[in-house]
Image (cartoon, rainbow over all chains, first blue to last red; front, side):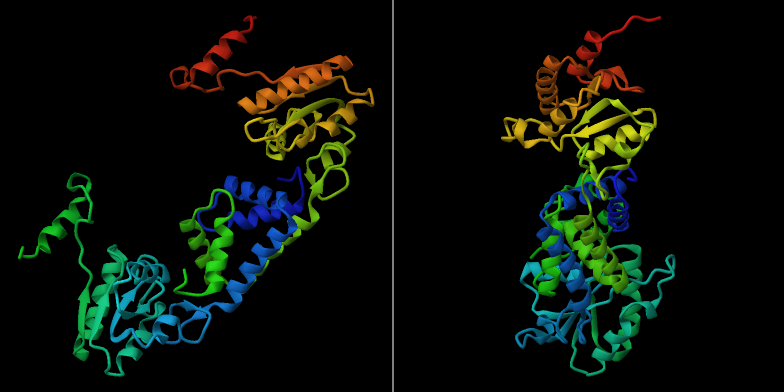
Length: 200
Length: 200
């Protein structure tokens, strides 16, 4: 990009450093920004700075929020006796979209992964244990991903919490609704078989 | 994204307004920015503002640059008698990468498209004609894309310039090098046939 300007190559480099954006996309984005009214560039830059400086972790459930306590934890209608443990704020958003879950959450910001060197102390487990010590919580629903890391984390949490006499459950694993059996992997098929439930 | 913060939804919206970035990618980018050190967010925002405010059109060839005249036009070694007309600065970059073209360029910033309501006055054709009036130019190589719009633009330029007695050429259209005949569309195959050249 040296045919144009150092400012363009710099912007391309910055965009290309974002996850999922390659050099070609970064170039396209940089040229787009330059072709837009200055107002548009200012708005984008302002949003980036504002989000980075204002957003922090909820003191209670560790999700992202711009207040001390997130709206879910602050909502008196939510059932504080049930905590759903998720890996990321996006997983929380996925369950919130269903509109059916009435408990609260706890966001770990990751999962235990010996491969990547992520141990129990690197995710927000201490914060979860602190919440449980109040004695108010009756059930912890472990909704980490159905991946190796997610399962490892679920097992670890279960072993950690069970001695405290709190019920620990795991979201069901099986055939997705609308899923076509022939296109589903073997592990999922066996899980669905193991987890079969009686019809009526 | 209202489960988190207006700052996050705002950033997601800004990212999603960029070309080629959907809502899911925009969310991923927003969460990434928030998870990074503040320095990183400041750098990205700074690059956006700098590129938008410093980059302008070269007074001669209309490409993007941060100086009055771009480095290619300012280079005394480039052959000013040959102008290659391209649609975008990225097309210029593609030819510069070959390292073999020694003439200069003219960037139209678009192509004529009656469908999209883009006429000859909406692209940088006036600037091209002004350059030709000096009488110094001997050849104009039309390197617009091989699309309907690119071909229309090429025809238009050719009709516009020919009366001035300047040689107008068009880059060859045909089978790409390394291309497999069976995978190439019919129009390209017929073009390659029409444009056949004598061997030796």
